[in-house]
Image 1 (cartoon, helix red, strand yellow):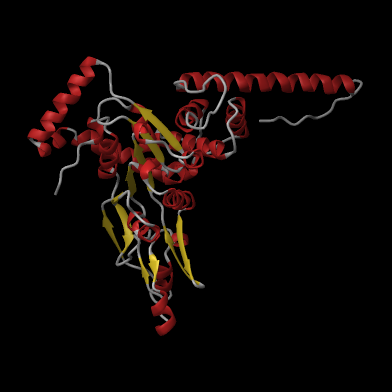
Image 2 (cartoon, rainbow, N blue to C red):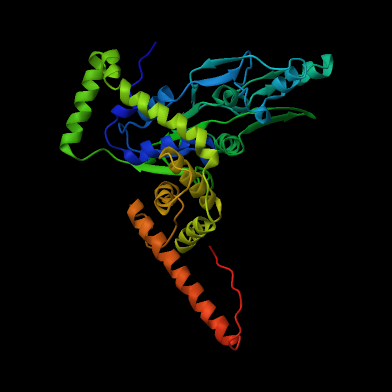
Length: 370
């Protein structure tokens, strides 16, 4: 078996690693696009993440890797089997890693229904596609900007909804398609259309590391891995296990992470102040902030969680304003959030005083925006 380079051995590129980890904590975040020059560990990071993810429990003999504990997401076949068997057996296997070739067609991605067999024999036969194999795993697309736009759209639809539905001639088949979508590209070879770019939850631009000592460390680690991959991986075994366990614990509590009205206001005020089009960014930031809180072992989000999420969700969506084509840091975003929320508090207070004055001294109850 081919030895995978350890995720925790990757030097630098902290934003990229955090974007991948947050998607691993909650696949509903919506994927990450990694843009950068050649040789910046883009594909290495994607493969390494899949290798350290926790083992998954799947329904035995299920072609789609259904979760035996989540009946609502079962495929059509598992739902039919459950009518005959009270409790479906399960097995435990490693997290799938699926590499989608640039030449992939729509049928290869979503799967195919045999219409002829359905008409002649009355039997529904579905041939699984890439989305079926990637369920509850990681779907990796290298050079995603070279993939057919329609296929990219299908992938993003499934990543967002968590379900793949194939319909042909009045016959339909559905199965879960919950996966971590990771696309990588070199901007020198062309960019994605803005409509597709916006549909990636995160976009991270990475460049080669400039610090000489870090570059030396990269060379030393790569030489050590090439010399004895298994021995090198064993050096990072404890850190890999620690990160894997941390992700697994975060997955267990992410659904319980709470947010307040003030948190929603903070997100809305931030995206509005930066002239972000649409509302997808707001939802992405909320999901990512919850994933960040869960990763840190908390069940309530903070302004810092929101800032860390916005640092990944906003750069590719900002079209104008002070942060356009600038490196946006979490510290800048957190300061901006605090200023915006502070201004909202002052405005509320001013509105309250104005209401009292207009009321001729009568006390009127005013609801808070938070």
